Length: 188
Image (tube, rainbow, N blue to C red):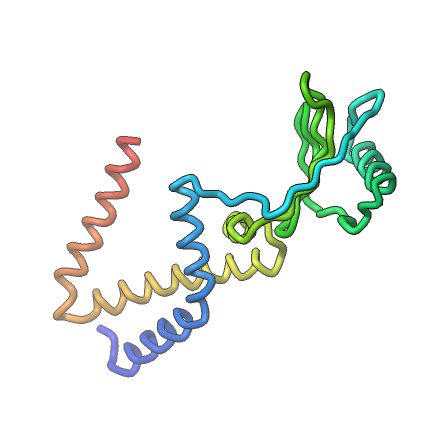
């Protein structure tokens, strides 16, 4: 059983960490819920420029050169520097970060190849925070939030299991929680 001073200390740390991480926890909870409901955000602004070339770029370096050439011709250099995250597929190459996505999109029958620049709206930016691709600061804060949540849950369980008035119901809740997760896993 925990002494009264130890319980107060657990409660204080629980409260301070909860208050510090509340804004980030709300972002994660809101974006997680919306993502499950398939609300993912999009672009607040979109710019499209034609792209014509004898061959499709085979590497990030070739795609970067093609992109810089297009932006120089169109006087659209204000979109540089490129975001650091790169992606590619057979007909799509681009870069993205929390603020924008810049993509080369391969030819299709109707429209031809193009360069697409999208400024991310707030919802997409929040989703990028949730996914851990909004930069190192948010990545570290997300890790600290996860540790804080584990601490809060474990400390809450310790306090509940250590208090005689709560021990029976806390034990039942622990068994129900474990059983629910196990059953959900087995039927999935």
